[in-house]
Image (cartoon, rainbow, N blue to C red; front, side, top):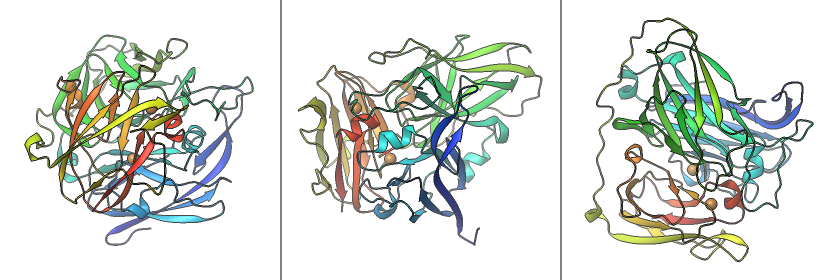
Length: 423
Ligand code: C2O
Ligand code: CU
Ligand code: CU
């Protein structure tokens, strides 16, 4: 249903039985019976109201990751929809970007997302739609997740494992190691790492470049070419892959080259196989300028804060604390610009650090400039071992209490999450 300004959607959370591995049945917890859930596409100048109905039998909260929602619609972890109830979430669609909605229930996010409660949400504006980039069927979401299965096909989830959940089967859009038939032309891929604990270093088996055009916060100012791309949990990158130089019959793999501390190398190298099956004329192109980008300057910051992510006291902590809904760790004036330093002393894991509400820019990564493909708007920053990262942001667009946490959802649940307040 739609009216002049708003589109209305309804999504039911429920359990379902599906075939993921050939011949076996897997119970999933799903948005509208599939995982990933349905991709919602919206225009920037319209508002969405999404009614999430909870028939999954456990309390849930729905967060639209990437959207600057009002606090009451942000999927606050303690703001639960009880089983049998629904909640209408209002989304302003205030940025054009690749986002995703997922469960955020306090201490159960890892399980609920792992069981299937995640889906993509894409906002587009006139500027983006006016560019000659690949569109329609050539603009393809790729949701990457790793899973562990029992011999019977059930997902294995161990809530007592505090370290992280590393699967040995990679799913793309819910299917194990799929193959995708492509034409010999350019494609745009919106890649989301929706895994609990695994980061990926993506590369093509041909050694050809990936052309990065977008980050978490939407299109970059200009395309960036890279041979490999690191994507932490919660991050989104938009890529152009150009198949035009391959002849019909060529097979190209999208691979995971692996990262330190990822326990990677069993079964997790291949992600997706592209089969070039047909000839097509390609009217798309990659403009050298995409979206104008204003760098935030360090001298405009009115405060600097430091956040330390580490393993202590048998849990994961931020500045020596776990989650407490009654504690606020930073109060920031609406519209202020601040520099936040994000550090880890540990060599025990990496932490993709995510902030709700605001997008930021990375100033430095251990005294070096950020990676070329990180020079866009971000809402997750990959905090590697011993990294010291400086980000800058302008706080807004509205007041409220918002969460920040590690997007290793196992760390988040055990207890690497806190909150800040704007206003
Ligand atoms: Cu993608 Cu607070 O989450
Ligand atoms: Cu978020
Ligand atoms: Cu972590």
